[in-house]
Length: 197
Image 1: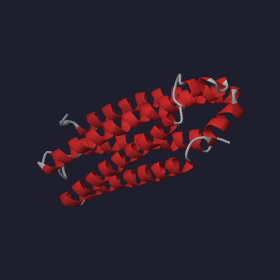
Image 2: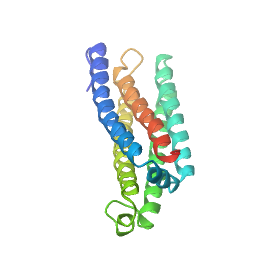
Image 3: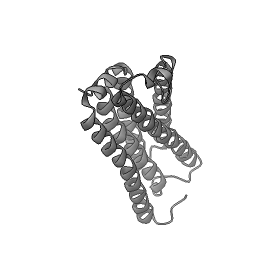
Image 4: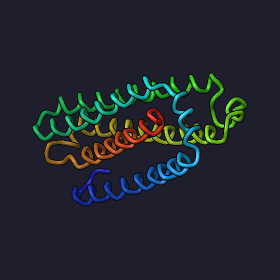
């Protein structure tokens, strides 16, 4: 993964991110089509989610985006120690996001609201679709957060052993781009599920 040509590595990362945008873009279009068909049921479903969890997780990811940007900026200023600390902060925030999401999912599952549950199957079709999309899209996003944390940890290790440094930082920038996309996707998921009116 150590890039010999930083520009080629960056282009490759942008192409990969484009495929991720296509994936989530398709899911957003699917969501929009079902929202158009079942607006009242989606509204009822959204009211059953915790706005507190959603808001806290949004703040966590926005701060984590700032932290990864600060890590890259610190590396450019030859402040390796600060760069590593900012990466650890980003990883920590990503893990807190996942823990919050696990608590939120646990609450819903304990209430019997999960795909193909007896409780959910008694609800109108629109609500069933809402929660199906909720678990699919937030679950897929959670997997991306976990992958991002692993990539950040890998970048942290390479920074620590000197393979990433002020003049060779393409890997860190690419991991930062991935993390920003993960954050951006959540910025769209948050209003779709938690602020649905």
